[in-house]
Image (cartoon, rainbow, N blue to C red; front, side, top):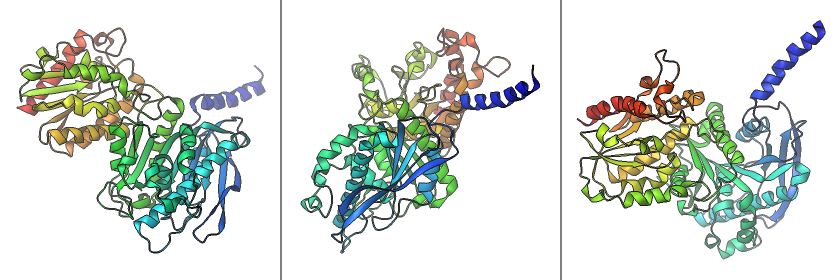
Length: 514
C-alpha cells in the first residue's frame, strides 16, 4: 500500500470513529459558533411609558448544515429590576448547548418595578416579562427559516426572575391577569389567546432557581418542566418555606405537582447550596448535564410532551383498577407486605409461597417505570394497614435514548417514599435493587449508579432499606449475567432465576422485619 495513503487512512479512521461515537444534541460536536447580536424582536411600553426596543442575541454552531435546529431560548434573572442577555450562567449555557448542535438565543425584556413594591407590582413586572418572552417566541417562530430553527423543538430556559417569567409564559392562567395588567403599559393585551398559539411548540421548560405564586398553575395539560435549585436558597424558595414577593412555591413543590399529574419532569437539587447555585461553575455544569439529558429525551420522543395520556401513564389504568377489585382485598391483615413494581414483580407468580411466612399483597403491573409508580402509588397503597412496602422498578435505564439519569431515578424514588410516608409514617420501605440482565447489560454501570444513590439515600433515613442481589445472577467469573437464569427475552427471570432472587430477598426480609 502507498505509504501516503496509509498515513491518510490512519488520520481518517480516528476521525470517523469519533464522529460515529458522537451524537448530536448529546455530545460536543462543534468547536465554534456564529452569532447575531442585538436582533430587534419587538418593542413595548416600559414603566416610564416610553417605547422600549426588545433585543435578542442568537448563536448557532459554525459551519452547520442542519437547517432545523432545536432552539434554547434563555431569559435572564435580576429580580425584574436589572440583568442582561449575556452573563456568567447564560454564557456557560450558551457554550454548552451550541457545542451540541442547538441554536441558542438570549433576550432582554422590560425590567423595573413601580413603587411601592408590593406583591402586585411584582406580578405586573412578571406579566411584562412573560409578555416579552411570548413576543420573542413568536418572533423566532416567524423567522425560523431564516435562523434555521425547528419550531417543533423550542425549549424555554430561565434563571431566577427569568425562570419565573418563562413559567408564567406557559402556565399563567387567564384569571391571574388583572385589568391593570391588560393596559398597554403593562404588556400584551392578547396574552391569553396568543399563549395558546405558542404552547404546542414549547417542547420543554427549564426552570433554574425559580418559583410561582402557586403550584396549582401546573395542570395535567401543562408543558413538561425540568427544575434546578439549591436547597438552601434564601432568595427564592426551594420549597414553600417562605414567600419571595408573592412567589410562594419553589422547584420542589412544583416538581411534586408535575409528578403527581404524570407530566414528563425532572429535578436537579443541590444540598447546602444557595441562589444561582452559589455561582459555582462546577455545580452549574453539573446542572447543565442533567438538563441536557432531559432535553435530549424530549427531542427524541416528541409524543411524550404534556399530559398523562401522552406521557404513557394512563395506559396502566386498567391494571390499577383491577387491584381495587381484588377479591382478597378485605382479607389482608396489618401484617401484610405490599410488593409492587414492574414486570419482574408481575411475573413472580410464586411470590406468596416464596416469601412465606409473610402475607404478600402482590401488585406488579405492566412494564411500569418510576414515573408510573409515582403517579399511581396512592392508588396502589389503597387503605391497607401494612407491615412494610417493597418496590422493584427496573424500566428507567434500559439501553434507550429515553433513559433517565441515575439522579432522576433517585428523585422519583424520593417522591414515592414521601407519598408512602403520608399514609405509613413508620413502616419499613424497601427498595429491591435493580437486577442485572443480559438484555440490559450495556447500561449496567448506570443501573449500579442508580442503585447506589438509592442505597445512600436509604442509609441516611429511618426505616428505608435496600435489598441487593446482583452477585447471584452472575456467571462464575462474576463478569456478566448467567443466561440460564433468564427467559428467552434475556430480560425477565425464568423459574431458576426467581429461585435465585428468592434466596436473597426472603432472608433479607426476615432480617429487616424480625
